[in-house]
Length: 494
Image 1 (cartoon, helix red, strand yellow):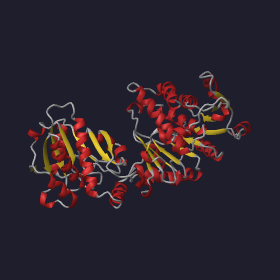
Image 2 (cartoon, one colour):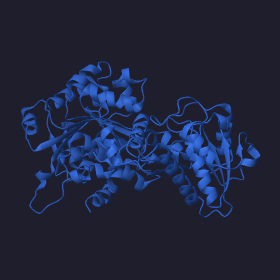
Image 3 (cartoon, rainbow, N blue to C red):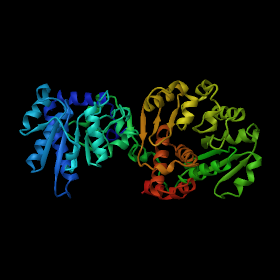
């Protein structure tokens, strides 16, 4: 994996800080660097504001220390700065006390709502990503005032009140930032909703921690960026033919529209051939749909079908979208899994196992990708309901020995080894409409056909899907995604 895309847990960030301080860069120097970066970003945010006045809210720990350093830096740059301290100065310790001592001006311990509107920027330097309990009533009031007055808020590390691992609010009232600055690498909570939304625009600044520290941290969570998998997608060459780019088989469900969306997106994303495996009653619907797709109308149990699927050139299968939960769907899913080929399973092929999910767990293999949304996930992994989304996806992957794509605004992809990718950008709320999941299944199948392993095929498919959704924007329907794919795929191959 690429270190640049690494996402850290709270404990991993503490470890990176500690190891840096043991290798020649003191914690005090890191704090001074962080405070200066906060100050620089503040000036950048307010560069067009003529009446610059900043209020810095300082907490009792290192975040507060960063705030005091930022206050000093801004004051030296002729900015009017007021500082609020959550703790009495005599209660401050270590580097935070040292930073406080540099600030040679008034520190307030009370604020009034009427006076808050005079500030062009509020710097929330109260608590970082490691907060473990709700804000007290005084801080909840300040957070509420910021929102009621539509104040511009810059949070340090994480908006106060948001857990840096999960992105979840702790308590009912938390800070909501327009900008968040963090250091070295983003945390998982920056990319998971609702934390991502509370953070506003995320800025990652470097303060002296080296990338080599990641080697000792055992990072296994990454942000989904094209650099993670782009080079794995095969380039088009003059001496290649369609079979060099794979042959995907899409199994039809009862709802033919879902199969059409999946099949066309699979072909458009680069698979060399796409065949729809269809029951006889749907054959004509597919033959009249698009001449670029191949159709095989045959019973799954027939020798004709078995001989066709045994072809080694068929290297990607997809089933479940448009299929209802039934005994027949369950039976066909198990038969498809026995083929031991790279396989995408969605919708009915998953929920058909709701009464006995253990059968699905045992039947899956390392070439399987399961793509449930949250409701489907709960039905097939009921034992994982009470743990965080990130951990539940990782555990589900281990239970099934498969790649899990837990779909949502912040889609999570996990493989059995523990490696995980969070996919919350590009982000389009308009993807929440019927049929978009079918397009995603087709995209992942296409990446499998082109030779990507299951983990990276899923990541590539989700990124392409999100990018197309972002480009289309408001008014999106699933068919629009297929039309927009050409533009996204062209950019990947430039």
